[in-house]
Length: 178
Image (cartoon, rainbow, N blue to C red; front, side, top):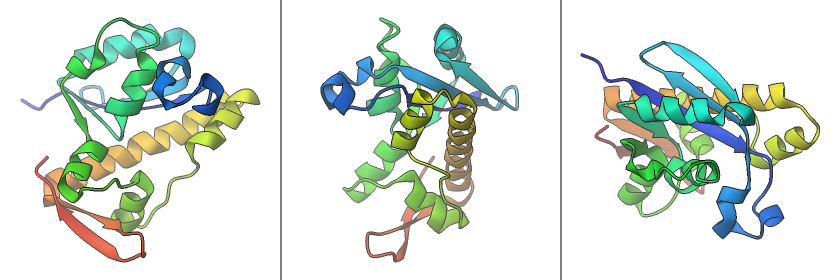
């Protein structure tokens, strides 16, 4: 029986500077969260008023897969719940790759080298969109990041490796055992 994997990402209402630094991530507020469920084969978009639904969906997963979700996304959600989300079965692709390479990779570096596609925006742009009331733009961007995360994970599961561009632009390969 296949596992119920939930791919996950969120964007915030505020930057680290606006909440007093990176040690206050839980104060950033979620603007939009997005999941893709393998059990349902669909994306779900959550606004802040639906954060409890997002938390419930994450708790129902056999595995939550994200990119920097342990240090960032879960910490944002800790502003809405007393449940310790790090107790969920989680694969943080960035953390796993960082432990293999001893340095951090960006999702964009991996997507570009592995699939030849780039992210459509970045987190600070999403915060500006939130301030402008452009929630659909945030949802589209966040859905795309979830799709990239899913593609990277599936590629790694199938081929047992992913590619990335190093800081000099050279395409590199790293083995994975997802």
